Length: 438
Image 1 (cartoon, rainbow, N blue to C red):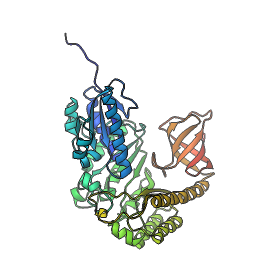
Image 2 (image 1 turned 60 degrees about the vertical axis):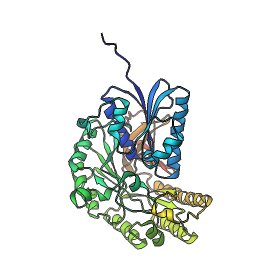
Image 3 (image 1 turned 45 degrees about the vertical axis):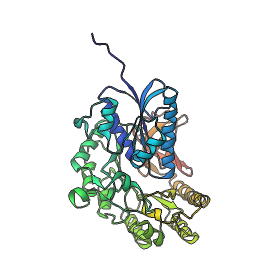
């Protein structure tokens, strides 16, 4: 008689962006079919057979987090709390030879396209029949939908094309299949992601097909929110705005990474758009959809950024009053075009500039939130905290944007459901509200 053994206990650690998270979820779904006992982002290694670390290698802070995580599990292995360590993803793709020498405790390193090899090494079987399916490690009512891999842009500061390769669009039928799979599992909100979302279709169909893709996604029954992320400003497809206006389940929200406003810096960054082009684009978007929420990001401390150029950026943010802003310190990445420039802005100045921008955005955000008091919004409940139910409006992406804090009352509130919420108060980056009874 064959003796049954307990399934191998495998930890999956996913670091970095949502695109990495999707890769980890695909890996988990494949391993689940082989009856592995999977733990997402384990806190400890008790009774763990192996851990797979999906790393980020984009900028300095992300690389350090990935290295620290590998070292933490390497120590656990030395203490016999863990038998095997496997490293995959961007850091491994970019620095495999160095990592092999520096961290010999790792059993094997894999790149960004080695999913089948990882599964086989762990002892599983890669199944083509599962393509388009994956686990959901986010709250079950929202998920990320990656529509392309890699990037054809040549932004001077960015290492992604070096790591992930050229832009490769996922065929439209495969995206619709995956989206339908996710919605059938209970997903109500799909967050569209790629490295350059507006470029979708250029390689496969020789034209931008994002508007057509969105029309098809919006027709999926029970999909209530579709959110657009990583929309490149150069050659922005204006017909996209008509699609948003036509379909009520496409959120009036765009993530538009601008990175700077000074034309000299934008030219050095190789962004393909300057000061006036950027301002014109924002005006056009807001004229077409007056109540749209725009999230953007900026890089401070780019090589040679003068005080006057930084102040130009500050004045731009003050004038435009973006709904959401993220600021990042310039990271001097080897093999990028900007690496040829002298990284001549001291860290303390970079940090001061980032803090100044975020302080300004805090004030802008509070003013905008204050103006929402008394209004009623459709809110998706993400989770329950000790004192509040926490949700979001269509103008807020998960994890990075504002939230709506709803005091607990006698009214029943369920996570993953939509409610009409009246805003009763405002904080710098959050709203306070109460459920409206029918």
